[in-house]
Length: 63
Image (cartoon, rainbow, N blue to C red):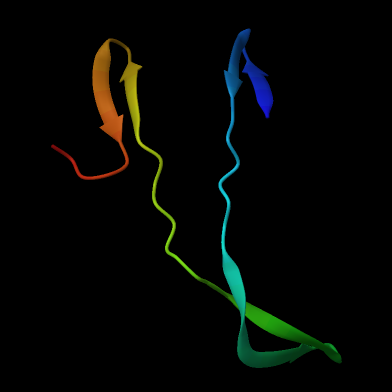
């Protein structure tokens, strides 16, 4: 998906999330619903960024 912020264009990749229905069932205001669970844990995105001249790294481990 192409996005633009303050005149800078960038491409956003929507993460694919694998989910499975759990065996748990709930009820809310008379409606029955099934809970979902993640098949695999999500990983944090990794970026090398700079703020006011100071570089920093997001996601993963701090090294």
